Length: 168
Image (cartoon, rainbow, N blue to C red; front, side, top):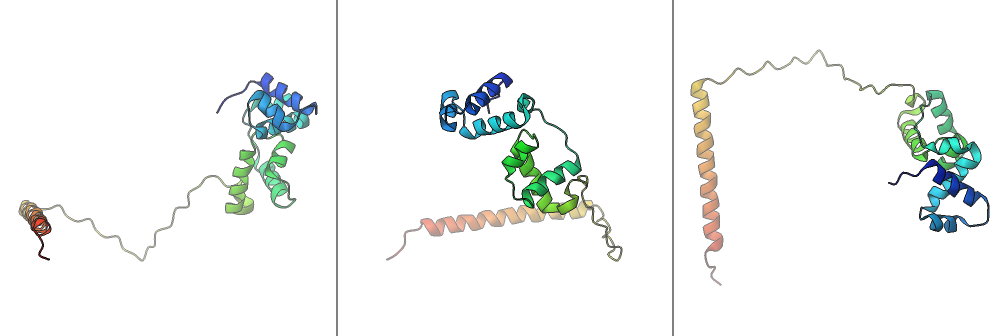
């Protein structure tokens, strides 16, 4: 994604807000998306050049909740709400909306805490298995070798039966 200078954003916004050219004409003229032109122009008209810097801001939990409620309760679009409150990227409001829908009213007050389940005390933990003795380890190795041998033998038998000519 290309980064545009503040001066370029201002120029594009002013060109569109002059009302001489259509949105698509301005977008073609500067070789950028019409959505981008609209977003810059509306933000510039409402809040001036400062909001076009693209710097991320920190927002309080109350502010986030107010913005989300405007979208949910009052029926404003995400873009309108972002422009109205001077939030540079409407994707920020979309993220807040997701959190609100997932966690409700306390979506912005609760910290990113993981809920750790409390272990049930009625279940006794299984004691750890003791280490294998030398005899058990040798037997285990022998069984693994035997198992591998039988698998190879089975594969060879299947290969011979598949490659043998079939009678019609």
